[in-house]
Image (cartoon, rainbow, N blue to C red; front, side, top):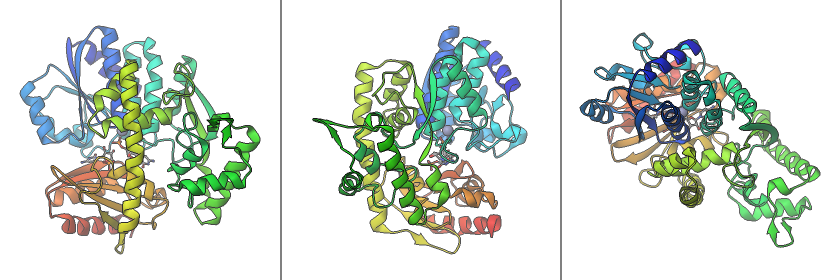
Length: 452
Ligand code: C5P
Ligand code: C5P
Ligand code: ZN
């Protein structure tokens, strides 16, 4: 991959003005920020657009603007056959539908690597930045936030593959530290019972979403929740208290049949951003990534982007407010699906949230439900202004049997006149209204073909 990164870096350096186009989630925002910072350091003029997906409308608009060079980060791979007429370079980890047409294109799939776990959009953009100037290795911190934002550490409880090399750059340049600890959101900033209440990777049966149970859980273990008047956070607990809590969570997961794989993910690597202030959302990669998702997924990408660039005060305060809203929205959405129920077919299961869940977070919700749901691909629908948004998620074990949701979403969407793509374990699509049933039939047919 390094030769391609180098050649893209050379191409970028030859231009005076670059248009960056990136995705609205944490990985996309960090990718766009890395691109922007490395161009700034080279004195190359640029602007950044964040979009929820790269579709024909976005491409048409770009064609009309006719920029000297476009740099697509964390998107582009699914649309290479539609980019004719644009001078473009791409750093993306989504599945490429037509490998033949890939040039000026840095993507792990071109090198036999899995884009869902090996490296993120931010990581690929970082590789280009590093090749532009070796001083850019401090940007590895943003690349790690992007990878964690895309949950690339979730499968094994740690980052693997190319992400590990980026992690080493981060350690070497003194911007990242890596420890073994509980992997839940909020270690540094939330009271311990809140950390349990909002646990979602994996969900803890009986605790996630249930404040009273979380308080009782800690009381039963004789753990003081307060130091005098202050709520104790995870980082304020002693080793023995932490050990007691982790053992009990693992026991709960195993006794409720959630398997070793989920139990193992409770404890794992956590990534500390050493240059950030301890006890803030920015000190822990997972919290930082969640903060960014809270901006991008609610049309406030600018705020997250500014936080990444180091413009803090006002932007950080606004991002924190969005974060609170995001976490509440997720809990409500989970509750909504709980009440609605998931419909099972022979090879797939689905729910349709209609207008009750925002299309930009329905994928996160589907992902959270996977450890709970039957071992079949889960298809989630939500209404969108462009038609119907689809998000698909699956348990890794089905991927090992041959399931590839990026192919399933791409082909099923095409069949009904939509677009789709993504990764083997997580993919999505947008389809025309009222084509859901036909879409599900095609999805089921392809899933059966892949794993039946
Ligand atoms: O667009 P993008 O690549 O950023 O989105 C990746 C999506 O895939 C995220 O929603 C992430 O949660 C999901 N994912 C997952 N399990 C993995 C890798 C990614 O659920 N192992
Ligand atoms: O939107 P959602 O979180 O479900 O997306 C899952 C993955 O599928 C993401 O990586 C996203 O970028 C990708 N996707 C895509 N094309 C679409 C919709 C989603 O490649 N039309
Ligand atoms: Zn990504």
